[in-house]
Image (cartoon, rainbow over all chains, first blue to last red; front, top):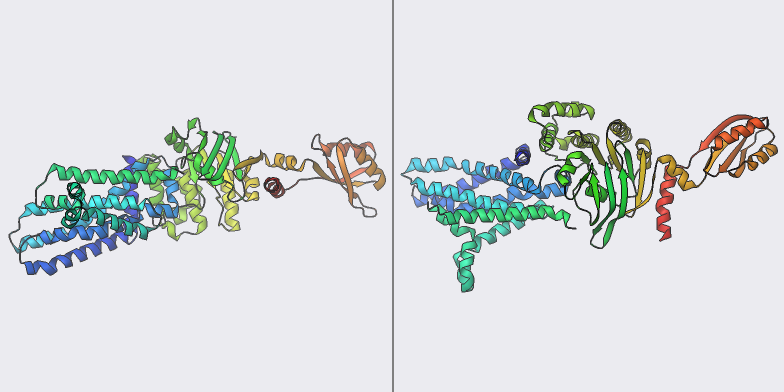
Length: 238
Length: 315
């Protein structure tokens, strides 16, 4: 626990000591607000539905930007050698880094709260789907981050980590999309629909919190964090 | 303190460390010497539990690096080559992170950091980002993180690379001071560094041990003889005859013979016995007089070159 906290604090210091955190947060809030309000007034409905529809696509880009440096930089600067020769378990380092990126994601989500408050001030908004939407966004974002973190452990190039991370998030999202499911062989359709990140997000977003969706997200997060531990361990495989 | 037994490390077909065995005793400063690419860093990475050996075993303070890696890591302070540090952190934050992972209680952290900053001469740069420091200061921060938990064993991989001459001298002084209390392994391809700081030297080449011993032992062993320069007053031919008659002497030549001054002889002898003493006795017994007696040692540079090139030519 102490080690996870130590790594978490270190990563947060690195984020907020450098411009990365500020750039990512400001760009995210700016982008998401702009995209939301440009269609919000046309729709003329006091609802956050539009916001939560575009969030997966924004997170797909922003999550790998948050995670790209976490391992790639350690490898590039060779600080990994120092980190991994301290009395620290690989999984503790992985969790510390994951929670640091999650913290940034939560800050991004919290900063979108004024958006929800403005909308509710403009009309009679149903808060159920909004709360569901935030929970879904948190889980989906966490899943994207675990994917991004895993990819970052495979390379020492941050740009490569970001691009491959984005691609993997994209694949994990679209495998459950109707068009993919429709084109896939019938035997695979059910599996793909279940595997895709999207369907679960939508069902939580409707305000229906099903334990299957929660378990699904936790499994995806756990799986990629496990792969991440293996990725860090790979230095020992030579 | 450290016991390395038959360690081999392969990266695919490449053998980085080849059946290497050695011991480091408590309180010893061991120079781990070898040309670039000899397998020094790989061996250090195995000792520090960064990667396992393909074959063989390593124990540190009685703990096996494979099965008790956590215990081993607690005993070691490690400064990898070129001091890899988080450039976007400031020194205090960084050292406090290391202290936290090293299990130093929050109440003691501040004092430990202050003390280690003092030892490593970092007081004046404490608030700065590591990225803005000069190479010398970065190296000191690296040393500070390796020492903060007061480890029994300190492993330094090429600690003076990239430093200017004044910084190199300072760093060596620092290592010497630390070496009085701790067991130290100093990896280097630079000879004066090792001979200036180490009790014992282990030379490796292409992953294999080629020699080990104190700097003096290595010099003698490689040369196979000792050389002495003696300035003696007396008739040249007569002195020469007496010298050649001495028990272990295998060669004698005159370097200088100024009129009225002492004759300078260079003697070579087998390494057994004390040649200086024998020369002195011979001079007294024969009624000559001695002006100067100087042992000439083969330099470590020569030892190193001889050993590492012998290997290559033997192949």
